[in-house]
Image 1: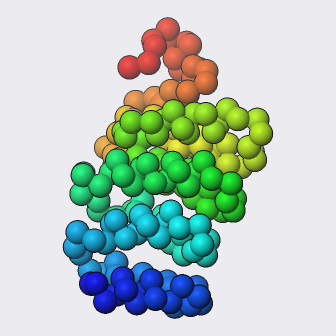
Image 2: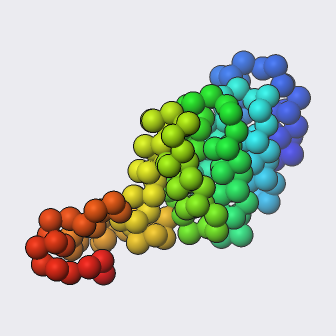
Length: 171
């Protein structure tokens, strides 16, 4: 594993495809250095955007040990706060759907969604992440039983017609 990390770091000027290949090889391994290394790559503004997006997607969809979740969420929030390429920030906003249970994530997404100085697609992505987390029961995990249930979903902005007609509030 160490040799893969060293090889990645030694080729700072390598083409994006070579870096992605190295990351794919590294991701096949497990060990205590993988997630911290991926967090370093994500945070490194010198890395190509496509490489950082790849790492972001990997961290979002990976089976993280619970002890890594706060650090990953914090790193993604930092990327979201940076004035970097819109694609990276957009992916960061979407990735945070999986981390809404971590302190500070909902606050960051809410502030972004309400910021009129941010691009509308980024604001919408932040709102979508908040809404998805609400639909998933604010756990950050999309539950198949919840998704397939017949219970009405409630909007974050206004009550649904079902709610108004029945007089029932959020459950």
